[in-house]
Amino acid sequence: MSNNIAIDGPAGAGKSTIAKKLAKELGYIYVDTGAMYRAMAYYFLQNGIAADDEAAIAAATDKVDISIAYQNGEQCVLLNGENVNPVIRKEEVGKMASATSKYPVVRTKLVALQQQLAAKENVIMDGRDIGTVVLPNADVKIYLTASSAVRAKRRFDELTEKGQECDLAVIEKDIIDRDYQDMHRETSPLKQAEDAVLLDSSDLDIDGVVNKMKEIIKEAGC
Ligand code: DC
View 1 (cartoon, rainbow, N blue to C red):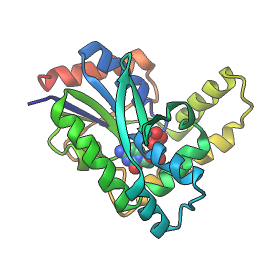
View 2 (tube, rainbow, N blue to C red):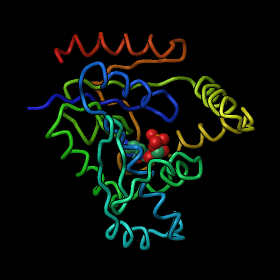
View 3 (cartoon, helix red, strand yellow):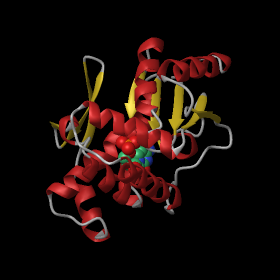
């Protein structure tokens, strides 16, 4: 039996940065489920499919093949065989992923893939519904959050560092809108699993969060 660690939480809470570090330290495989929803969203955008056209989304979902490969320990999402990692990080793709991940047809397909991965390997998987739906029997469940102001500031610093001009207030509004959309959809909304440990990273740096998580994981015997 493989060990599974589930990390859920809102956009920008630091899930992927932390999960990647932990996976390296513990020798687990990191599975970024948001990247899978982003790959689907990228396909919809590329093919001119609107987020509210459920019939077209369903038809396209049926045709699209999503799989995962690992290159030098990095997860690559393959969309019909092509590595789409370089193009799925844009804000536009994230917004489309949030808007289209509400459809059961999209979720069913990706949840099956996620469950197959977790059955075979020791994984740290992050997303929105990992502890509640994808891996309800995970050995450890953590709900990682931070205030919207802190998450917006982190994003602002990241973009500024890359030389991109941005507006802190706009970033925070986008974050609040995305939280609302992810938390209020009918299918698998973002929420803390009853048996998840809540971790607020607002006042912690990356190492602080990693250390807290290691304590939680150790206590669970993983
Ligand atoms: O974590 P992220 O920002 O890359 O995720 C993009 C969107 O995908 C997010 O706004 C909601 C959706 N998502 C989801 O519905 N379920 C998951 N397990 C992961 C992501």
